[in-house]
Image (cartoon, rainbow, N blue to C red; front, side):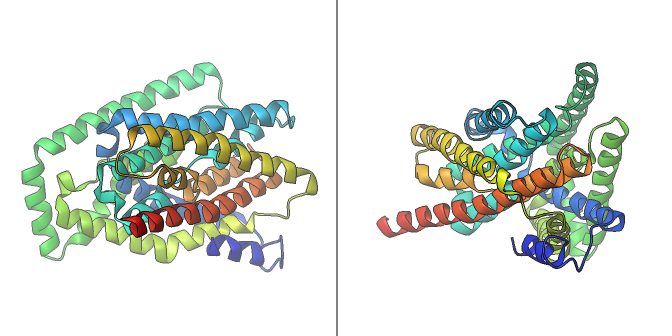
Length: 357
């Protein structure tokens, strides 16, 4: 939030000290690659293969339903063009695995089965959101071809992941040997090259590189790399991104924000109400029924909070011309508001649980 605010203050919206340019867009794309690759690494393929019922349930109730309602209201009530309506709704309705994983780790819930299910629901939502982003504006025939290519890639990645797991003992010994000899840089470089290769492939077949980086990161987990090497990789990504790429990307994203016109304020408020009431209520009810060790208000905080993924989707939509600067700004402002409000809801729920226990 601080990086976005810095961009707003330095950009045309306030001082005009820094003006968005093609060079900054190139830097932003590089930063986005590293951020998305880390999100994939944090997600892990195990999240989707375990507790699929709960993961899918959370994704549908807390993301898909409010996203569809937002899109319908945007088109029919506010008369937005189709591209702007869907893009803005997608950016505002999507939870973010980056901030979710931080909240779950800091609270200790990541070590519980229910915490793992919450993280899986958010990861599933993010994956679906990226797929929607690259398909909703295309012709049906093109979408069918892209979907088939994407499915083929995911299936191939799945079998590669399964194969690597069968060789886990051998791979873990090799990776541990490399890391203990101080050659972690070679492993890290290999992970980046794999992510770049998948990203280039996705761009070549007409799908955004974001999905390539995300899916390639999914097969990076401790089951094949070992706890020691995986920990090094994860910490390296976190340090590089948190100290450089994250503030860089979000500062540049803030440069694009403008002061929204008064007529968009009701639309902003309606988006906030839809995601809070519909998405929040659905996540609350689903959690109350199926979660055993986590309070429903904790789930509400997790699926209400917004972060990196929403800003990323809004930035990609802006760069591709799906939305203009006004509705990009609406999406960013809504994301900032929900990030602050629902992080507070989550923290209060955790504090109440600790006090009563």
